[in-house]
Image (tube, rainbow over all chains, first blue to last red; front, side, top):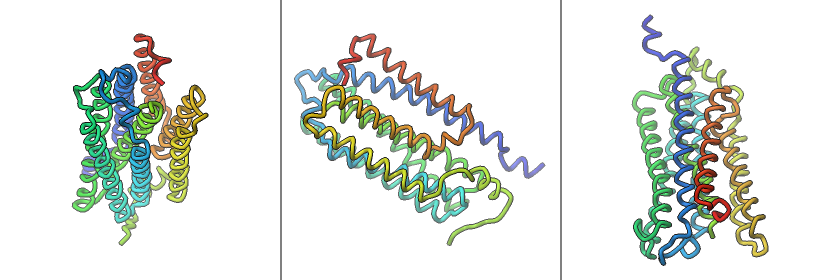
Length: 194
Length: 112
């Protein structure tokens, strides 16, 4: 039937969500490897600056708060989609992308400060593992911001119906995942090392 | 203007997510997460609060935040067993990898 051909069946949507959870599980192991590597090399500074000299906990706490609040705006966007409230959906998607960009700006500032203070990618194993871990997380945030922006554009151009709305749910899962990885990084890499 | 299209598709979506929390609940959870983060940062500044107690406290508080976001913001508690199994299997895999790598390099207890 024409209607069946134009709309994905419920089982197809469930498979997409299941695939996203499987992808996130594999990402957990990816970041698990990067965090383990950082902990192995955290004390090998080769005479360069280490975590105690570099880390600015109040600044990173604000960044963490921003990312945490972006999870709130993302879940509010998802809730608006559940209620079929497209205006609220767009508002919260834009808010989430904006908070993501604030976080990325903070990370850029932090990296610039660290480089200025003598920690470059090749300064020491500590520097390499730190930039690799937080850089990969930042790249994930950047991808998330792009996906959120795409959602806003799709919403304006064709609307986010149930068939396309699953994309809101998948993007929301990805965004919350980026947040939970930062929760681990903030605790293990920052708070426990100073 | 709020779009409130009434069609079977919309009703199906609303029914599927009927057990999810309300926006007010989400604000409450976000406040809880913010308070836990503030406590995490605060305890690192308490001079006598260090060593094993500090490490365990920070790991427990971090785990509480992690699981709260997963359960309520990612709605995993409302998902079928398959998705829960998949995610927690990945989490256990990550923890196993973490412990194995640090044990292999005899660095597990020096890492914190």
